[in-house]
Image (cartoon, rainbow, N blue to C red):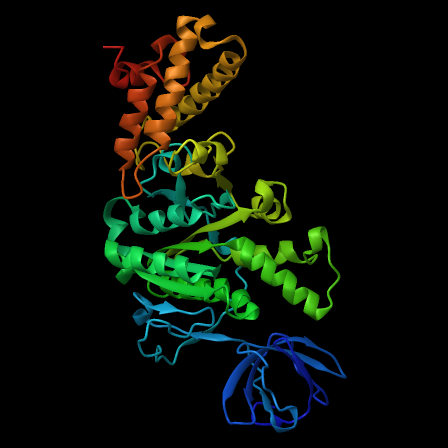
Length: 460
């Protein structure tokens, strides 16, 4: 069928082409189209039955002359050419260059859908990744091979946080030179796409970044290919070239909206909030491509960014993402309205694998205890702040007033930092002890006596 061209188009509307009289076509197959003036277009089969085949055309179906349109079913999935030359390049969602440079020439072309990975071949995620952001490194640390999403809301600076992580992320020790980033943005505006590209170029990290950009005015079906193309590139860099790869994808909500739109075109039965019932398995298919494989040096660590509609953490997209991944970093509107950047709300944030990537031999021996103490002290401080709002700060005890001062200092100095401020984990831990020293040593029960004597400034 790959060498057979069909001229049996029945109808075309809104980027969809209906073909009749074609049998044996698989959903997900690539399609090549030649219109009546000889221009080539690309498409993807999104539904196949005995009497009709539904094709989503990337470039749209405007001005189609159905009787003079030739269609060839390539009988293969979308494939991405891969080589070491993809580093420093910018592609669209289908893997075609959008940086004005020549396409990648390689005999190695990988199916963007990936290959099934035997769970028994997975290695447990370990080892600390430094993002340079204290609220993440100090209290919700990222480990190599982990899936740690960022939950945000409309209007919050998740794109700036994602770009900062790409610029600053590094491994500690000897492996730092082997660290690269794959960045994918889908449904993004032209302004945001320029921001990402200029940010990476100006900081000098562009040569260690592979970018996949799908713009808001580009085909919806291409948006579904973008994360798969990005992860295909990451798998090649990690498992063939032994790099440690950080994959940052924004915004998964745009991806899910595209999935819902295509599901409607296919006639799939909708489930929660109109999303297809297979949303969970589709997201899992993407997220589970991250991780580490036994006896392989490379690894893939994934940070998907998603904006929660109406700030609703129970919305299907963050809800299902939370089931699949190992924690979440939550950006809060209250801190953002106070001018705190990055507005990480630490109490609902969580990194389930932090315990396996911090402490002695990874960061510093006091790190796990300091993180636990910061959580406990800040939670206590927020209780005191709520009490002060009722009875007034002047009615609080001296101890409670110290907690109020701690909360303000914690939000302004520990959570808050400049957008170009790259803090080492040791600077983060020292800053944490500066803030904990505002509280009496006897109230810090999550750290050891030896740590108090060594780091608490009131315990000399």
